[in-house]
Length: 188
Length: 151
Image 1 (cartoon, helix red, strand yellow):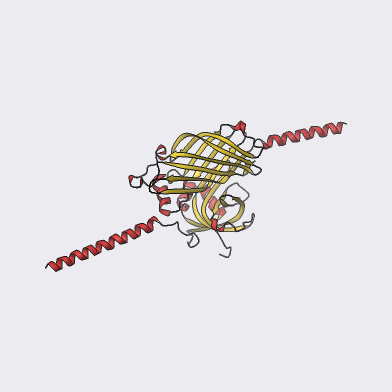
Image 2: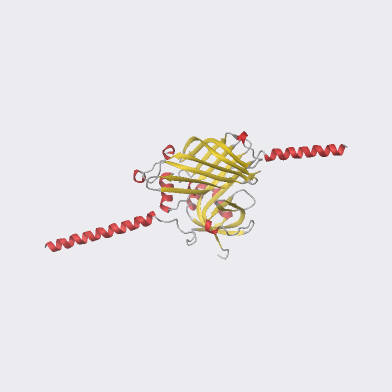
């Protein structure tokens, strides 16, 4: 009788431990993808960065992104050079960062696979300028981790990214940023 | 006298035309220039993952100036292979720390199998250094291609 009671206690403790563990995790990736898209009257520009670092704390919804500006790849070398040297000045401001959180953290069930809408709010820093932003996105939960999907606009002038008048017809004033990050690593 | 002057005008016009055409061809070529082919390029530096990580951890500013935008040949042990929708990401490094040399393998080589714990030599462009207290220090490379160990 005593042994059975002891076994039950141990089982309950183990289960409690597992439950707690699976619902308080930090998921991260160092190969997240962020791309941006500029559609102007004369030209359409797309660039992709596949080395984005993203960390999500499922307990409180804290979310961080770190993007190396030089990691953006353009189809044309000249465009990539202008982007780095003249527009974002990556030698002065090598990283763009986001620090914020998922607002509706309570409505996301990390233990149940599915797609959940998410409201993300925080501070975005690009080119040395920090601005608060808020965007809607999606959180795809699966056995292997969490996928973050979002699309939001970035007005270049807000971040003091100035485009010379000569190429004003080739680069849009507001670019579309697309986040598609697979956080499939767990932090212990 | 008039013929000589006309000849002069023709020569000037011809020179201007050559400059215009030459200039235009150069501009078009420059505009359409693709990023340099990694496979064909000679690496600016050849070293091990350990040496590269050490240089960046010692002085990130000097190392950044030395390596960023350069094509390097780096060899080490595969620490992580990450296949996601965006292609294959390899990280080279030792077990002693979370730091690593990370690279996005050029999509053309995506089907090559990469094994954890095996030696690998890759050639790629250094894009930057990402230092994180929690996640370790990473030197990030782009457009990497695996190089045969016979090199």
